[in-house]
Image 1 (tube, rainbow, N blue to C red):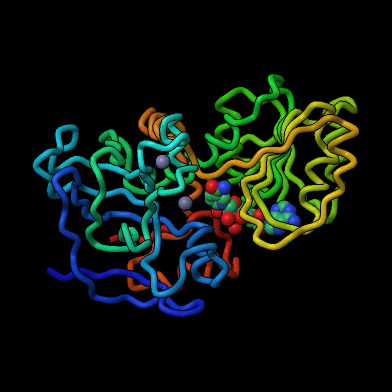
Image 2: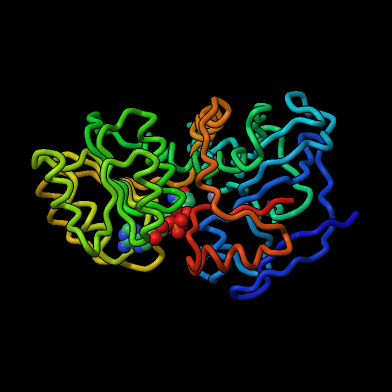
Length: 341
Ligand SMILES: NC(=O)c1ccc[n+]([C@@H]2O[C@H](COP(=O)([O-])OP(=O)(O)OC[C@H]3O[C@@H](n4cnc5c(N)ncnc54)[C@H](O)[C@@H]3O)[C@@H](O)[C@H]2O)c1
Ligand SMILES: [Zn+2]
Ligand SMILES: [Zn+2]
């Protein structure tokens, strides 16, 4: 049986093609997609800057839908369940898998590759262990937001600095705003967000940021010092790419504070390491999520966390190209673009 799929076929070119519907294995379920999200990493494929995905490739890894078929060994999920999928599974044996760090497994399998179809398809197969049920009250778009929310959960949770007085989030796109939501949830008091787009700054204020500034107009480190009696932030999370972003983050963090890097900055950028030494700061990377982070994000959404505001555009599959163009060129006010089936 055939189905429709959205593929990046060339640089910045999306086509809708008929492909073979996946057949499920005994430990898999078949999901009829209801909403799928466009993510920053889809843009890397779209623009030809992705580390390993090259066209032609099926887009996407953020999905919510209905289970329409289950393999004969599947026990925890049934036909008719509304679900989302953690879009990764590991080898189960390596040192990282044994610690639950599937995100770091060398043999990790992710959608949109030779081993697993992308989610911009009418029917998506997924191993039972990657499937999470959605409560009845959770709409498909919110189910689809669990994946990016899990990225934010990991980034905020990875910090080891104990104080939660002040957090700085550099970049208030989908990931930055979701970090804000998670940080408020975990009890950060003062959260200062940056962005270069007015709409995103307003969105940050709406979702509880103490201050939201354009760092080209207002000095970030000064703002942080003013709001922390000169101490600096406990933590800074980098959720945007810019040549000066590491220095900006380091300049606003206190002694013994931390810098978490989430943004996938693929080119080399300069960094004055002196500040980090002088102030004994720590820097860490946050790569997607471990399964426990995904579970926590699913629990937050199933518990009623509403992220509706962040879905700024909803298009149909035929308009996937437009969705990527909007996100890529920021030609409209945009946080999350979703495709609805
Ligand atoms: N580590 C991971 O697992 C992971 C997962 C998802 C996304 N990412 C990466 O995180 C980054 C953010 O993703 P996103 O989906 O939120 O992207 P996005 O495009 O929605 O958000 C980026 C935001 O940064 C803003 N921005 C641009 N220049 C800025 C600057 N100089 N200072 C402050 N803000 C600036 C933009 O206006 C935009 O609002 C991307 O690099 C993406 O590839 C990483
Ligand atoms: Zn994503
Ligand atoms: Zn492994």
